[in-house]
Image 1 (tube, rainbow, N blue to C red):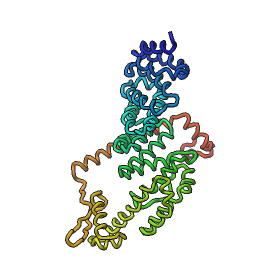
Image 2 (tube, rainbow, N blue to C red; image 1 turned 180 degrees about the vertical axis):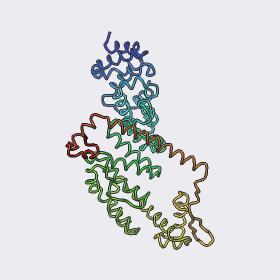
Image 3 (tube, rainbow, N blue to C red; image 1 turned 90 degrees about the vertical axis):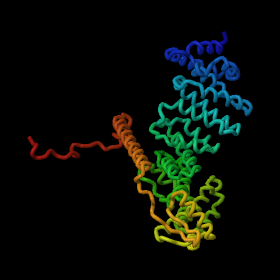
Image 4 (tube, one colour; image 1 turned 90 degrees about the horizontal axis):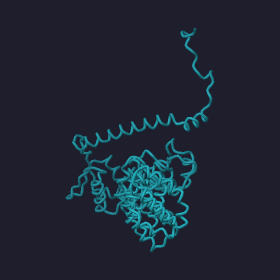
Length: 424
């Protein structure tokens, strides 16, 4: 009997119980090189296997099938086969060969991009994450691949859904960098700038031995989103940021630092002149759209400053002060800011006067109490997680060995002397 056909028979017979699957895993590991040598003739054998029953064996065959170069025509059929496998495979079996499963899913992503149909990959990739995850707190290598597909297909809501989950376990540092970078871009697409800042902040302050391209690109967007959301930007990173990031990121993003300096002057004309002079740079970085939003945010920031000084002001005065072209344009900006909850005001259409008012929220509604309670519960859960992680780290041999090497050895002279009354 042909070796491949014999392996198919063994897969069919050893996929029912946990002990059988464990035995099958050893057989498949031994046959892996032989399968890759026969990759051109493996595809028909997939029809003899049921992905819902023979998940582990099917995975080995599928990984070998897709290991070689794939044409656009082949990609069309492979996308269907892999999507069906992801949908019906058994989590317990594919977790026995996570590297194989990740390889197949990444090739699936490459193939939908080859077909220029990223939307087709979004749902299957989300399913693959759920089947690979040990819990929702686990960041897998497939998370960044999923977020990239969401970005390219503009499925921002689907991408944001997974960003709401708290992450405590990370397989590879690069996964965290890409997850936060792509996640930040998805939040920008949804204009959730606060969450975008949080994710981009994680990238630029994450531990790193050298500055990587992901951190540099994230820092550019971090500057722009800070200006849009806060109306200012601080060039100093927190103390816990890597020293290489503190030394080098500003030099790598100099045009953006200068943009922030120009923004801080509060003069629209100067800002627009600077952007025009550096438009090619911003465009090559794919950040021109964000830069234009920075200009719009300056109008908002200038209007917000007026609320701190005046109780009432005419639309004409707002237009003159904020450097808008007309009272109508000022009215549109004020209305949009009211709608977004950025200011609290009323507009009298008859005399064109704007009246600024205090925040009407009294923080006494049932909805607000539920939100506060939810935040408190989340913080309590996070506190418990941090305590457990701190205890685990305190007992970790590698951490203790490293911290021991870095800490100076203590001498007896370093200890406080015994109090006089305890002398024997």
